[in-house]
Image (tube, rainbow, N blue to C red; front, side, top):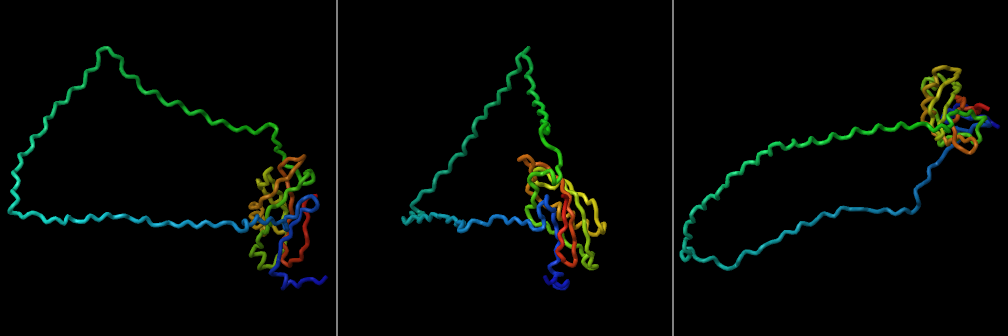
Length: 230
């Protein structure tokens, strides 16, 4: 089979990730989210401006009487101010009556109960060889090629230890080996911290998992697969 020249393979440079026989192939697992339902109805809502109703009153068509015929009204006497009754004093407190009781203080809030971890919970992290169902990446894990390594045309490998919770979250990630320390660390950590996995299973139930993964950064794009823990 003819090899792709490096100049043509350069734009297609890839990072090959594999976990061997006991771990899913992370580099090629892609989960496509379900698409929108075909023919879904679209409801368009529009605001209709409210019309204000104004009532128009026609003026009286009967002519007003002449000013000479209308007698001027007699001046009205000013109204007398209403009588103000004096306010009656409040009755004195009855001698010997007990003072009013103070309002009761609010009860102290009950302490929030502390959720205890069930005694039957399995807190172990199982390696790949002890799992019945291997964890599976829910989307492609594609670390970015570091610009410094790209400029210098450098390849390298990074070995990771990843702890997965029973729901597939990455709870801890650690670099346990690298042939070029520090060059690819940030790239690989950023990519795998954001990863989500389908949970590992043991005896028919989701469990925590401990994965050892080796990631290869290949500037030439040769496509050599790198195996994980067996």
